[in-house]
Length: 300
Image (cartoon, rainbow, N blue to C red; front, side, top):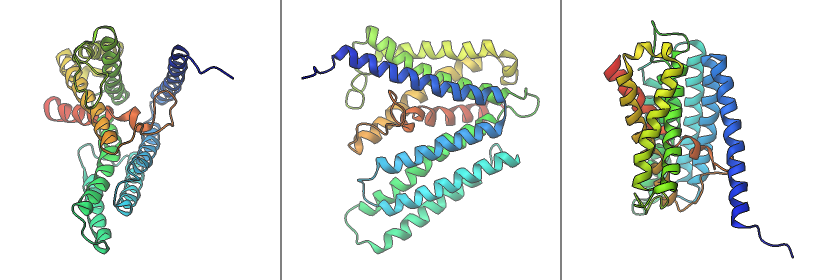
């Protein structure tokens, strides 16, 4: 009889799978970044957004109101196509959120209409509508919509690649925050931060991640300084580093709330060693809106 794999070999296999997925993902991101084409970024965002929407639909399959979430999925796909179409035509306004407003309205109107034929059973219909609305806001708006709009923020006077460097800064700070929390928490984490959501996370890990995030932010700033001249100084990089790190922490925990509330362990298995698309973009769903709002309201 074959012996069961040891704990060490299991960890090694998990690390190898995660490393392979990470290299593949960064390879794709690198190709898009190297191209310098906004349409390439839009296509990548649309694909990730579509996969994330499908994953959310699968994640909530046991919840009431499946018909509402099917409607929300249809509207989400339509929104992603509209967003990509506007990018390709160069007609997407930086702060014109009409597609998002229309999408929210259509999801809510359609979901309530679909629930008219169901008898009232406590708050089941309200939960059905809210889950459909959350599915539209969570991935299409917070991730896809804000990523594209954030890339457009530098505007005239900035370098042609400035938007790409800004997105790279947001992505790296979010991922460095996650890595910093894991590494520092593993080395010296003693005080559990939020054990009912993420037992492995510690206050020491979160504190350390703030410093690691700053390292990532200033590393990108140093590499592409000419692409950040429009941002108005290194102090904005430091502030963004803190804000994005805090947002990334909450984004990671927000997905934990979603998974634990729905009583599922993983959002998906598309990315070996990482999980699903939602596991990949959870921190970005919070970091991107924070980056957009800070830059739009404070810097521009």
